[in-house]
Each structure stands twice: as C-alpha cells, then as structure tokens.
Length: 115
Length: 115
Image (cartoon, rainbow over all chains, first blue to last red; front, side):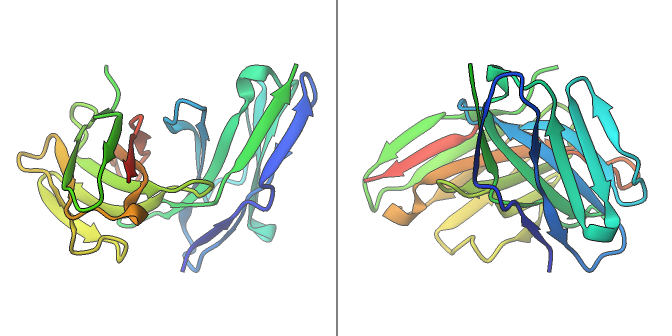
C-alpha cells in the first residue's frame, strides 16, 4: 500500500526566511511519481512539480527547490526567501508509474508566512 | 486554455436531500477524477473515468454516491440521502496521460455542508 507522511502540521515563518516542508513516502512499487501541490485559501489545488523515481536530480524553480532522496524515501520542498503569498497548505502526493492508480496525498502542511 | 471548472462552488443542504455536482475538465483531457477532502486532511480518491468509462471506485464511495461521465466530457457526482458526514470539499481533477506521464490538474472544488 502507498502512504505519504507530512509530519509537520503547521509551520510559521517570518517573511524572507527559508523554510523546508518534509515529505516521506512508502511504496512497494519500484517506479512511481511524486508530486507537490499548493492549496491557497481559495481551495484550488495548484500543481507545483512532478518527479519520477528514475530521476533523483534535485530541481530548482525560482525560489522553490525540491530534494528527492530515494535512500530515505523523502521528497522535501524548500522555499527560499519566503513571501506572504506563499501562505497556503502544501500537499505531497504519490502515484505509481503505470498511470492506473490515483494520487495518494499526505495530510498537508499549513505554512503561514508573517510579514 | 481554461482550467477545470466545478459547479456549484458551495452547497448547503439538509440531511436526507440529494445533491449533484458538476465538473468540466480541461478540454481534450480524457481522464477525470473525483476526490473528497475533509478539514485538515489531504484529498482522498473517490472514483475516476477514462473517457466515459468509470475505471475505479474507492471503498469510500458508498451506494449513495454515483458518478457519471456520459459523453466523456463533463462529469456529475450525485449524493443521495445526504448525511452530515458527507460534509466536505469535493474536488475534481483531469489529466491527459502521455506514455505513462500524467499530471492531474484540479478544479476549485465544491464545498458541501449538510445540516
């Protein structure tokens, strides 16, 4: 069975601080996808990144970066120089590579960035 | 290109009433998913369609729930004899898998409150 654990329920930081959101996953599949989504107060889940299990390269997109470590089954997300607009709930999710299973989400981490 | 749309955005109903939600996926997306999200939790899979075929249903989808996608475009999710435990956000997502690469894009959700 697949499982995603986001141990941090809520994080609060002051604007311009860096913050890392943790994600640990469990799967018996040897090939799989990992995702991060952002859910602002409006409620819509916004896609941020997809990473397949073949590719352990870290990725950077502007102030966002992701660290995928297969050895520890983790896919952590770092926001550099946080801004108030980053305040949202962030979800990590997992699916297998066959495309025949739905996304399995963690419980999310609520990030509050204070001005 | 418009995103996934869902209607209504909010629904308040009395216990025992039937409700129906609609989801319009991104044009050309052949897969459509329904998820349910309760407070403080990540989205949980309910069911999904590939074109008009309903391929998988979660155990969360009781007999009171039914989903359709009659022409492989929009989908409806009906809940009969609503219960207070049905109060949640109902999220729709669509995708177009290409060679096992799939990203689900979510709509804004329908927030249901059962009194």
